[in-house]
Amino acid sequence: MIMRDYIADFKHNYSIDKLQFVTLTDGDSFRLGCMGYGTDQYFHDRRTKNTFIYRTGNDYKGTDNLLKWIEQTTGVDTVGFFICPNKHRDFDSAVDKFAGEYQDWDVKAEGYKLFRKEGGYKVETTDKSGYNEFYILNKKKMGIVSEDDTLDVQVGASKQALKGAMKRMGNNKMSQRKILQHFVKKVA
Image (cartoon, rainbow, N blue to C red; front, side, top):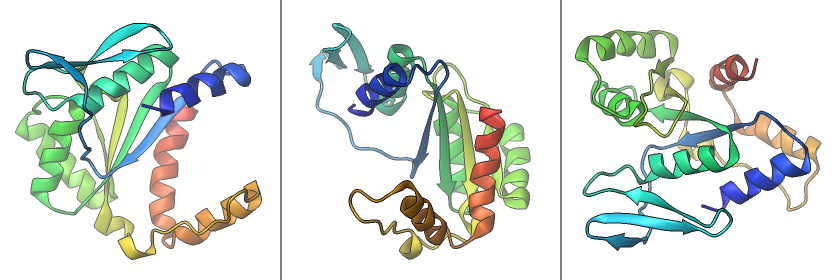
């Protein structure tokens, strides 16, 4: 919720026309406590003075709706990355979740082959997804160990210190390369 204001201020302060909002997710989120009418839940945006949908009925599209709100109120493109275990069930679930709706099994089967072979798969998102683009990255292929994922930086560190810490954090160059590869394609 707070990120939208940072994005809007950043675009305004630096006169930026095109901006990408990139998220790296584990796939699940906590629900917000929003006011509801029946089974629908809404939130009020004080900056735009409008009310936006958070959830309708029993859908679990709160994050997707928040991403659409960020896109609508700031003009950013939303790009997501999900680091997925190398399991068929996890991949299958992630494709449906981040595409915005159930995907045909044949499409997912071909995608799973790419996911295992190349270490990543671009999900074809729909209007129901909160993302403009979404990539599922193979955790096993990237060699990610969750204990090694700590970013050790002093408060107020310089850009150079932050850059060095990020390089040390990414112990596997292949994992950095795969994320960077998708990101560069999007920005270029």
